[in-house]
Image (cartoon, rainbow, N blue to C red; front, top):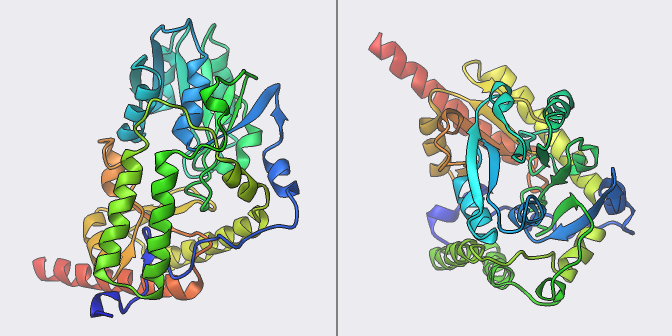
Length: 358
């Protein structure tokens, strides 16, 4: 093993343990409690990704083949929107909004995608209901960053994705009951994305046993191919094996671990990093903003600590100052202590540089 891999990896695609593949519950009561078969007259459907779920909801809006004007938050991933438009035969016309004040321009037959940013925000309900009062406007709530709260939606439709919350390639959508097309009923058929993802997981397992640059390159190559394989017109439903894993997944334990990790890490930032601002959150990511984001990120990555990179292609101001950390069930306080030590060293160096300049 080379010195490059002497330190265990924190964040990114590799981890010190195999994520959560063995976090299983005795029955599927947790899944059905969090994601009931019906909520507010809408039916639960399971898809492979959040974009598949969103495309399935949008496909039924408006007249067949007619353009759809979709309002999306400014920090939404543009690559994801390209995939979405491909699945909808380029029917979408995008409007980006920065704040709720922009939403009063929305018109009849247009669709609002409301993002619950890094947590479920109960206060959003009043805004969502006010938008819904406008005649003919459709509201879709995006719970990708608050996946366990989807049953609390107040819009017309809702979706989440469990890919960033767990190792599950499952997205839940609440939509009108619709008949699936013949191609969509081929449940056992694996998408190219799923095949490539499985190959990547095999290589990852070998990497964790004996890290090497060759395995790392192979793994990253498969991941890139898998991402490209998502650019298809078909809307993929959740594979039955993945649905079975989700049905017996221990969401309760994962929630407890994530919440405890978030609180511990937030307390450390409150104590040690006055120049950083912690954004609201609870169990998805620990997000902070700092003017020295790029320096902190570079020093962390040099020590094989990989912060989350959000919406790099969105062009919004927040994406340029945001430093975001995994708090998921892979990690323990020991992992976070190592991360904090790197951040402290960078902070001390930045303070010395400022003193010299003065």
